[in-house]
Image (cartoon, rainbow, N blue to C red; front, side, top):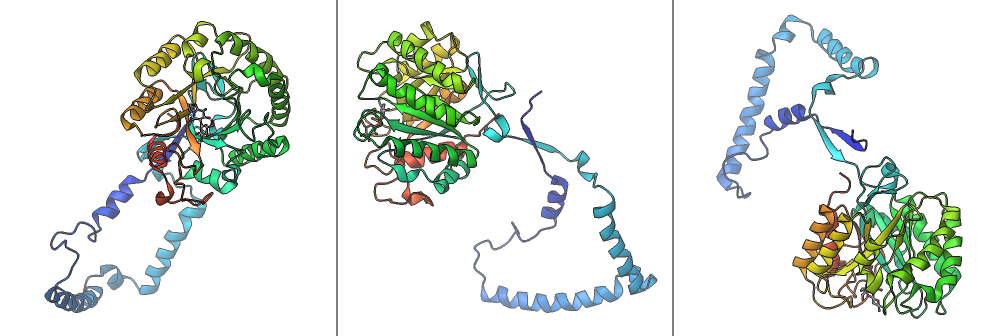
Length: 411
Ligand code: IDC
């Protein structure tokens, strides 16, 4: 039996009764909302009539009062009113219809995640759907890592996962002159805010211009050793150990890197989900499917797409990999082109979402920033770091907001 079901009880008979007795809504007649002078005059007259009639009816139509004294009646009502709530449990809801709502796939319901076959699952073994957003580089846009923002992403945007992207080689990156302590503190803060707001969180070692994860492997090992030690008791932290290998880096190279980094995390955390990037900016998923990592459990593989650049062929490769048994996580996607800029392709974006949902693939949208580029979810004119309104959202932001709001979490 499905274990994570929230039973939402609707006392619908009561509602129907109430609505049936309500004449304020949908009353026939003039529905323009504007009253004519004569109608107002009529109403005045009606009110007078009504108060007169009310007096009449009180006197004439209350057989109870005419048979019993007023006092006795009041006493009786008080007794009836007070008793059941305190002394007798209300069993009347038993026969009411039960509407079952999905629970959101959040840590408080799903707990520690696990990979079963090609699926991401919760602690009970039920499928989990993580839908959320990725930060931009935290070195460049640190201010979005604040508690109010995370709360909004969870409860306004309906996101249940946030990815913390920490560039390694770009300007100010972790391995290119960035302030390591500050960057780690941002990661800690992000994990804390995600935890407080019942979200999963991905710690992303965002390799890009460093192409091959071996380039900064020893830094990666130290970073993940320290982070996994600190987050060992969290059940909501996932590790993405190399964003996008590229520049001809082979799956063989990536796999050998992964097999050095994974055991470092496993020393501290025996079962956290670890996501491994795949060749050619996370597009050659077939290479991983042909030769997956078998020495460790709870490993997933990343596909990244930008809808205006990557279409059917990458979707098909992704589905093929999933069908062959590979657990896939789309840790980054955009609805514009692969530069993070250019025009939005809504048709392709919707196709991607459809296929990912059909295959229970989790996903994070790029990016939480107001950078002047299509993929940023906030307009560049918006300097707020929480408390956003619709006007603050870019076209990508509006699309992602609507999509996340309209996608039910859980099943
Ligand atoms: C882009 C950012 C852009 C930044 C650039 C750095 O949107 O502002 O200047 O990185 O090189 C990826 C990468 C991701 C890219 C994104 C868009 O993972 O870092 O962000 N993209 O180009 N893969 C495919 C696209």
